[in-house]
Image 1 (tube, rainbow over the protein chains, first blue to last red):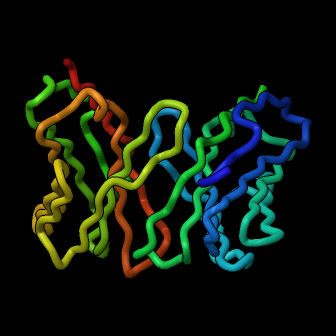
Image 2: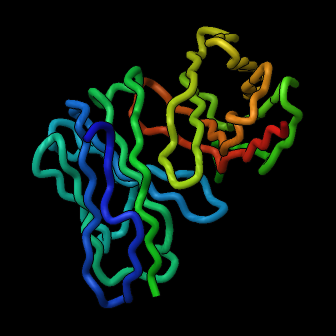
Amino acid sequence: ETGVTQTPRHLVMGMTNKKSLKCEQHLGHNAMYWYKQSAKKPLELMFVYNFKEQTENNSVPSRFSPECPNSSHLFLHLHTLQPEDSALYLCASSPSDSLSETQYFGPGTRLLVL
Amino acid sequence: DQQVKQNSPSLSVQEGRISILNCDYTNSMFDYFLWYKKYPAEGPTFLISISSIKDKNEDGRFTVFLNKSAKHLSLHIVPSQPGDSAVYFCAGSQGGSEKLVFGKGTKLTVNP
């Protein structure tokens, strides 16, 4: 399998649940990103990892907890979310965290919080 | 405050004609801009970029124009094809940062 994959593609969870989103890239990249796209809002950067180290946390609430065990995998652990957290969560990767490198996106996980 | 604005949520053009998608930005420190294209149920894919040292970048049917004084950029697609129907996102960044700031997107429909 090639490119950037995300699982699950759809997720419905209650506010007391704990769930995790998974992203995997098969491109040999070293940087990975989590983005959030809410309805009628711009795509927002949440976290950046470069060589497994977090280099950016864009003021994301602590109910979102990222994990990057290696350069190919990125997780987003979710707990005690709110209905307003319902959105499309996109993962991306790039060869490095330099802007000269194009970011490649996964298909996203559509999350609904009830 | 929205730093990147795409004021037209949708645009419809005829096949073979020119599509012009507009983007305005407020952050004068932005020095690199990108356009992404997104089909339903897929992630955005990179389309074309431009550095602030240029005012035009062309790649096949796609041309991006940058007007720094007006803080405005536009994406021209000519000739437009039905397969170009997608949502187009404009994004800006400053100082080589990996932090892209996206607009809300414009949905382009190219009618056969």
